[in-house]
Length: 326
Image (cartoon, rainbow, N blue to C red):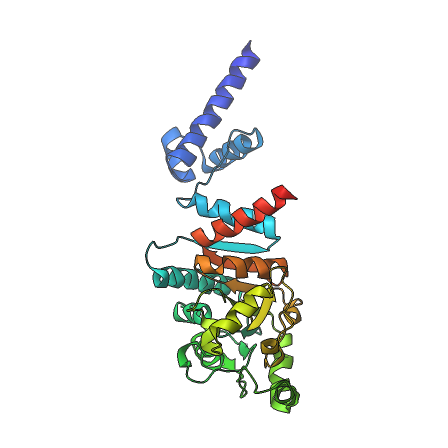
């Protein structure tokens, strides 16, 4: 009887200490003073309580729905990480800026001195650069994954490489070649130039890649800013099953690079050349990016995805519907 009473008293004391510490937020010193115990005794009681299974900590995010989407995305697409941001109703620009801010934070969380960061141009990568607020300088090198585009200064890959390097305190290599050559022969010549080879050789060794994922299904697509084509040519791309673009390469729904004249004139690395890079962060916002994101995921090009809630929910719905049918 005495043993049971002693056990009860011991458990009651542990319970009291645990409640004061975890629920009321008291420090071990404050608990020791209140209960007339030594701090070492309080520490032992907390340790005993943990061992007895009396402590269970549940951390609930105010954005739990986003955390759940991230986990489903990582599980379904076999990603190393995912970040989902709230979609701002009626404001595509605000949504994009939130995605850019989240991607900038993810970059800073994993960035190390000596990293080589390969980037594409475009609005999404521009949003990352705009929202980057490092607390220190990094000894990094930024390198383009594609040629440049005249007349699109703020989203041009060379401009963004320079801006990103400046913000991080590193240096940038620039690629003095157009994104689209006039012909495949000219493209081959440009790719064979020593200056181009030097940039792309370094890009192939990138430890981090920031890539936008582009739509081609909407008339206002940024892809057509890079290379304007007629409505008939756009329809021809759709009929060929092209779903989007990554690194300026038109890709099919299964992630394969389309065999088309536009791709044959690209001065850019192929998405498959980034497969060895351990931190390929895809960035996209807006439901027009659902098909392109699916294609990039099917191609296994990404290690991480940063996108907004409505877009990710649509991607997951399509993925899970396909799995259920299969």
